Length: 90
Image (tube, rainbow, N blue to C red; front, side, top):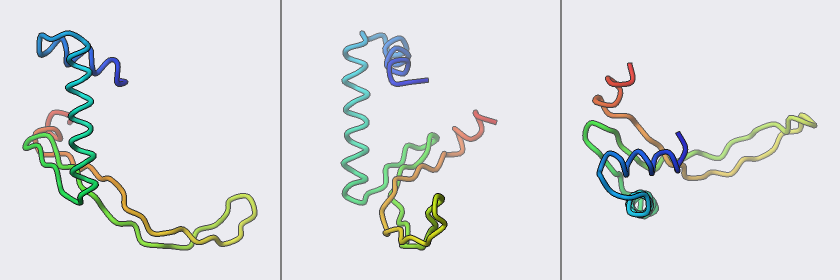
């Protein structure tokens, strides 16, 4: 499912038009992004938790030359599915 298909599904499920569903999805995504940028967790009970994790700096290899390269530390977005979602996917 891509974003356009998700917007259609939201619109049909909520009984709203695609433009309103698109705005709702965009504001949902923006709210999650802002919370993660501040370092907060976003927990949707039964669905899952969005959080920020740290990746330490490490040494990798250039696949072309085989020479070692340094990979910088960075923050990454993480998602852990909740029990409700995990049970439905089984």
